Amino acid sequence: MLKTALKLSAVSLALSGGILTAHAGGLERSSQDFDILFEEGNVVETGATFVAPQRKLKNIQSGLGPVNPVPGPDFGKRFDTEVDEGKSYWVPKVSAKVQLTDDLACAAQYRQPWGIETDSGLNNARMFSAIEQKISSNDYGLNCSYRFEAGDKGFFRLLGGVSYQELKGKQTKISALSPPPALSFGDSRLDVDDKAIGWRIGAAYEIPEIALRASLVYQSKVSYDLDGTVTVTPMGSPISFTTPVSGSVATPQSVEFKFQTGIAPDWLALASIKWTDWKSITNVSFVNTGDKPFLGVRPIGAEVTSLDLYYKDGWTVMGGIGHKFNDKWSGAATVTWDRGTTTGLTSQTDVWLLGLGANYKATQHLEFRLAGAIGILTSGTLDNTLTAKNGGSLTGSKADFGTDVVGGMTLSAKYRF
Image (cartoon, rainbow, N blue to C red; front, side):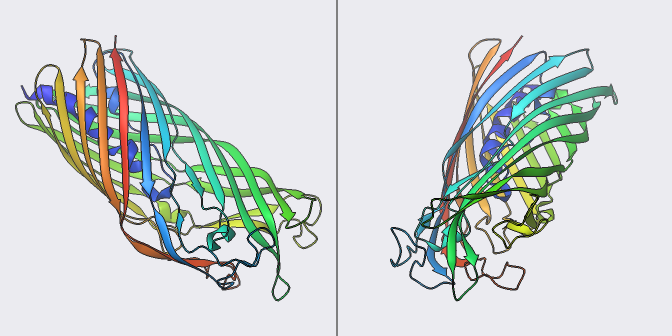
């Protein structure tokens, strides 16, 4: 029966979910979804996604010239012109769904929606933008679904959810402490965090008998008032200077449409398209909230440091097909395109991804899934020498990058009771 194909959709979604969104906009690592609410009975699911992006910057050029001017062990050396920008990482996810009535179901979920972790090292021009940077997050969410009969075989569902999120950000870079010609430098460390609430709402229509399902979900932006500190240690000095700072940013709103249908006995076709409002993230400015000027030159309320991102909107399009081989095994394949969000300041270009996955039903209650994906990060250039408010940045840099590879896998287990 075509109804059996419905079980294949989770395999297909595992292919494109954690692995693809781990690169979307350069920040998103895990997307919110309602798919577990369509499962029968009570369900607990846990899994993790491993992602290995291989992004290498080449021909890095500095506005300060080819020689390192920063006092220290690399002073006077020629800048390195290549650096590996990406780092591998794991993303966990846990969901638990309870069928409260025949028509009402709710699911609690833990995930890590946003993240960045890079380490470009020293003695290259990128150290003036970021040496090490890490953004980490936690999302504790609750989603619910209520369904109504719509015809003899169909159902209409109302979907909604809310999340409590925690966001932390750290960055280390070399900052210019005085203007030319008497340039001086310092080690600058930013450490901020905040907590916020987000919500989502949507609707779905399904005909379970033929595995047909269409859903549309809106995810709100999540606004943060990030508070923390900036610490600067002038090069060669044993003394550090710290000031409290504050900055505001909102993670982007999004709209996602998903569709699936059985196309033959034990065969399923599915597709999705998602718009994400990445262009809403431009400049994130951190201002001095202390009770005195910082370093004698940053008055109270003045900008101490900033993140210049200036993304453009993101679009993600996925298509796939699944097949049930027997009562134990099923599999799926997907192709995904994620439009790059860079406007030339970062290396987040288009991503093309091919995914394959398998589902093994060990018992009536226990299932295991393994999904893998391989893809390409398209080539391009970046130039952040013109992002400063005065029309230019002496410590900015330019770089090229070729067509690089991204790979990943997702392993998960599901228990029904």
